[in-house]
Image 1 (cartoon, rainbow, N blue to C red):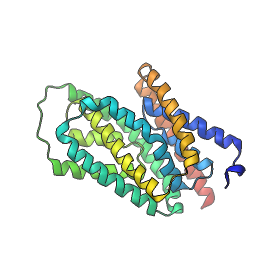
Image 2: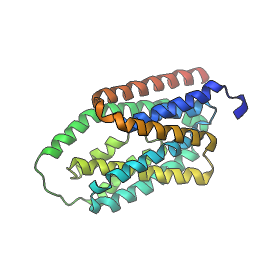
Image 3: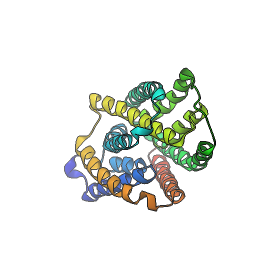
Length: 262
């Protein structure tokens, strides 16, 4: 499909979906539930759509790391960065080696899994906050087991990524990280680094459709700026419910679509 043959409404949908994705990511996450299908709608192949979407949304993660850098636990940076680099690169490489039709049939399952992860993030986050509020001491973390726990999560981020944030926080909490700000900052760092490695891998392989990437990047950035100003006014449970419902609806659509084309 050439750019000239794409209906104007699909461009409009890419702009709209990218803007809303930026707002969602600033408020609760889950923007890929809209921006990734929008990439498919303009005719980008599934794997290239995922790669292009990852690149388009990554700058927003970088700004989040900059904002939270003072909360990072320096002693855990080496293991978190190592797992992020290895996992992010390997996930991206495996994605690029996946057949287009195979990945397309995985899409609804990936979206459904990500939606369920977002749904579970509410009770897990409340547990983490209660745990963080209790008196605690700084524990010495077992670095090799933590690396092995983070590695498959970072691999998933490099491959697809939506909904993985609370998995990182849970893994860190289980290995003795108890302070909520530290959990959140390390989560953002791991996601940002894993996606950066995936981004560089996608760019080096030529998997990015730049004309759509730049459109999505600009409008996702604008949406993220707007969303950041209103995020504190919204009920987090309401935001999470919206993300989960959106993800389930999009997953159902792809289950239906794949059923028609199989």
